[in-house]
Image 1 (cartoon, rainbow, N blue to C red):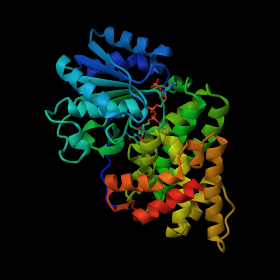
Image 2: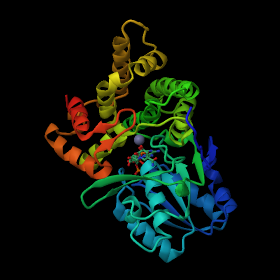
Image 3: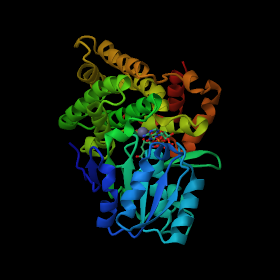
Image 4: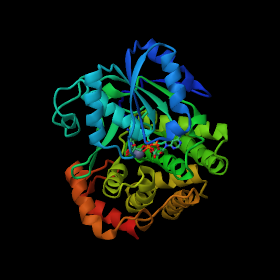
Length: 391
Ligand code: NZQ
Ligand code: ZN
């Protein structure tokens, strides 16, 4: 096990009707003026917005609102949010939504206390030294941004999608009520499931040694997600299955399953270029890229892939034929993605093989000549993986 620091300072408030505690929570952090940040309407249609406002007003806390965050959130709304926070002297941002809303809130939180262009941070020209506090009411278990140190923003000029990790804007609190996820369209539920599984797999695929404790936690979480996913896709209002998926999403990405090892993250980088170019749902892009990545890197550590097949998908072991066992595991993962209605090829997400040079070029702008740690991929490797996904 490698040395590590595990920092998950977020207070998680989990369970039925917990969104009604938001006023109390904001009060406990001494919030005076709150920006309620949200997406394109689901929270208004479901009545969640009204309940949130009622809870905040009951504590006599002042608030303003800024909606309109789109999936793969854009810098343009971040600029608007920053101006609003400065003008209105906002001291706390409440993100009500999923990864896109939370990421946009984190970027606004950093930009609101900075005199320059917030993109300086995403461009790595400046480091974030302070940010407004961010609280979350989660409506879709997927990105794990409610507990993560990361924010992924797309610069509209050139459609450059870029992530930034920073401990300062990890959410102060996150309210997670699985009932709020009942209204999710099946496609978003499935895409979220793939995103959280991918966050675990990015950490599971490691060259670090002696990581058996976290391997077992990761395998157990993956098995639990797969079981709950099968229930949720048939019964969208099954509370226990939704609850499993919700908590799995958070622990998949708050660092808990990544301690003591070097994580990979190549597949996420490859996918971000797909969602930047085609505005595809992140989880759907991952469903296309992960099996392709795994097939390409299978010989990097055949025993790890063999273990994954046995422990997560119950593939029958055969010590003499590890490649066969490992391949069966990757095939089972891909079949599961299909089973829950996700795409697994370029064609299904409207991507085009002719764009591969463009994808690789944008990847190079974002990451340089190499990406990933499980296998340090060259840009030629990246191109080959895109071709496998294009099959
Ligand atoms: O905009 P609204 O109307 O709210 O609709 C949203 C949106 O269309 C809808 N939705 C959310 N909750 C709902 C609901 N519809 C009905 N009922 C509900 N309860 O779902 C759609 C997708 O929302 P979004 O926030 O985009 O989903 P997700 O959580 O998957 O976030 C994706 C973004 O997060 C980034 C992705 O790249 C992408 O930009 N990521 C962020 C990470 C992080 N910060 O740690 C890590 C991830 O790897 C990921 O890259
Ligand atoms: Zn992700």
